Length: 577
Ligand SMILES: Cc1cc2nc3c(=O)[nH]c(=O)nc-3n(C[C@H](O)[C@H](O)[C@H](O)COP(=O)(O)OP(=O)(O)OC[C@H]3O[C@@H](n4cnc5c(N)ncnc54)[C@H](O)[C@@H]3O)c2cc1C
Ligand SMILES: Cc1ncc(C[n+]2csc(CCOP(=O)(O)OP(=O)(O)O)c2C)c(N)n1
Ligand SMILES: [Mg+2]
Image (cartoon, rainbow, N blue to C red):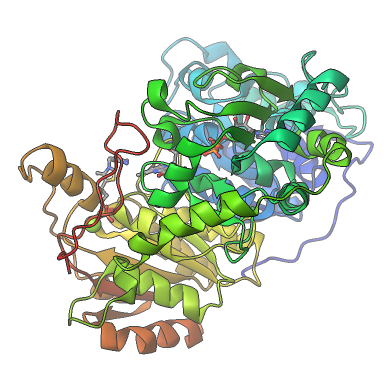
């Protein structure tokens, strides 16, 4: 995996180090083994010092890739990912990746170099105010201009990134701070203990009221979100669902937190959720929202959202409570801790009538599912993703880009495990998949990693194919090639009278593109070739690219048009195959 062996230095040698050396020594102390970055003048002292420390640096092809790799690393492992860039354009290239991490609450630390402190504010060569630029898209950021502040700043950044609601933190270090020396003491640089928000204090009566609502509910639904994974509360949610026989609906980012094969799993809620899931939410008399933020893709129009339901919201960030959906009971705190206090108050209840009602509503929809249809000679993305799911036993880490293929990946790769799906939900960043998959592979080298990308998004960060080759890692890449910016084309089809403006897409021959990088590939046009191609990719020793030429004008169903109610969905027409 391209790891270099270097002598392990103590994390806190009682010596004087340069600011640049302190950067690495602090990262070693924080347990960092891999960083993703790109050098330049203002960060050169840091790069020069790297050889003395046991950290593997992955050279990316664009700094956006570095931020997404750090993000994918974090989503796959739960650890803090680290990205490094130079000042000016290096730093601004990180911004999309930082915003992506911010919107999905992913803990990453970005370290940038800046011009020397005396030049700050003078429009010096490659100077930008990156702390100013990233203020709205970081959980916190810090400008460091003294060597002695480097270690405390980085340690504080790690603490902020991973505590409470996680998020990205940027540390911008001036060149003179990197070059100057200071005493380094890892332990002394420890931040003060994290002080939880004063509201993070679940009260006895809140828990009792919540338990009472759960005991008396006739039609309850658990809404499991990304917070279940971030809190590590999978087991507690599982116990709650089983003990009280409550069905579980998941957000896109919550998929995997409750096993897809479990009889209480309803599937994904929201704009592209299955109709029975949204119907169950609309009919529910109690929603138990666990670590999810009632995103507009999840609720549809708020005035008609789950109007019959009382609502319990368990959430670590007080500002999310009553932001979109007014709730009856807010239990503010870490989900796992709150559920541990709630569970002893919940005993067995009979949920069979409600579960039967939901089951009955599934029947009519399942027959329209295109993966159940006979081979008509056409290749659909659903076939591709369903076969990848089947052949990997559902055990791969699936990293998607953004668009139709992303929704099909959510619908047809049935997630059994937490951290099995890595996808940009809140910002919806095209170009995310390939670099995020590289990060995931470094986090979990023994796992099978699949990229599912569209022909559009893949081209945004395809340069990272070279990073894969330079690092000698194995990833399987599936391009769902429909010749369109498909998700936008779908909106044009449904809402803009099929005016396909700027969505037909010419692409390079992706197999030749892979070949130019030294990566093997295959184009697949029919369903009959599909399984063998997936096998070939999986058994190839190196990264393998599959270019799936799928049906061009297929759409993701069901769909709730933006601004409509959760029960007003567009369904797959019966003759659409
Ligand atoms: C093309 C496209 C289509 C989409 N369609 C859908 C769709 O159909 N359905 C859908 O669900 N999504 C869809 N999304 C994704 C959607 O935009 C949101 O990203 C997603 O719904 C957010 O899920 P979430 O609230 O679970 O996660 P996040 O946005 O990550 O929110 C997690 C919440 O958990 C809280 N939390 C974090 N840690 C803890 C903890 N330790 N304890 C307690 N709480 C914690 C956070 O404060 C936050 O409020 C789509 C995205 C795209 C790009
Ligand atoms: C960086 C960025 N630019 C624009 C968009 C808007 N957008 C969302 S989906 C989409 C089309 C994606 O096309 P493709 O990658 O081919 O995937 P498909 O939908 O065809 O599966 C676009 C342009 C976006 N999400 N991200
Ligand atoms: Mg496409």
